[in-house]
Image (cartoon, rainbow, N blue to C red):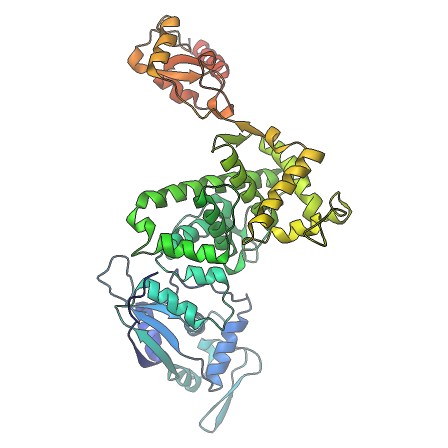
Length: 488
């Protein structure tokens, strides 16, 4: 991250009345700030309003003066810090919550009981008192960069409860931060579509809930999951660490909007996004299978973490040329094997007596190591132990996957030989086939492990091949001729 000089700033004072009048010019929910951790009862917002009415100070609010001539800039000001205070004031003025119990305010010589009142229910004198309350602001000038704004947010929150992923999210327009957040969650101001693994729905109580997970993704939990998985995948070296230091380095080195490697070479960013999508597709398919077979129960975080490690292992071991043979069979072996370590019955499972890492049972160590990202041996141990469990008590991992031939295509010379041997006809339609339109069709689909050898290849018309997709040749031919006979 580049910070060539310290940002320039000035102090200002706005009354709440001025703040409300300027609200349309202030981006109060920039994507680089942490999500609100407000409870449904709005306790934190109520505490802010209590402080205001009791004459307390709610601390300074930091804004960044934006250059509206730059693309993508929609507001004159963008929030750097103090978003919750600004939202609390704005929401209260718009009657979105009531004041806390047992609240009184003294204006002049008169006492007003304003307990549990909404803004619209306040006496005029109390409304005026609120609107004249002075907010202290620090405004950074237009030369402040995205990287500096993110740094300022992290610096200002060193003493508050901001977790590490919330710090990373503050890198604002950083390309890694954008990929992570837009993959992990829907962001209203961007109108993006997250990966299907993270789709949410709303309960009858209007609470947002993930469709495929048991966990509720508070405090950017899904962002962290995506960031750590991405960190492993871009190393392209199997099961790896994804420590906090490595995550921060990834954001800075790759994603910096001015000096990052992804800005200099967009192909690297596209390749990383492709790898991430493929990995998440694998976990999504598992989660959908689990939901189907486990009475609607979603995936747990421990399952998901172990799946990222299994996926990374298989990608390295088989160079991307593999697939799960049957997800229902995979789930029926993977889940109980993992549960033997971390499930409800693990205290009586097969791994409670084996001591590892000094004085911990293998089951205890597995539970801890699934939350470990910085020590490679601990990370790789989880994969080795899971494979050991599958081998001893269930179906070995190698028998749960299909290994695909790396060489999907054959040479045109070899295809011509096959075409001539077939009498220059399409193997499916039996119609004359111009060699320019001939392509190699796999008898056993490549996606199912079919090899690209003479014994598994026939010459077919390119349009037929497109229609066949991943079907086995004999199944497609049967369907083709049945449809043809029905249309006679």
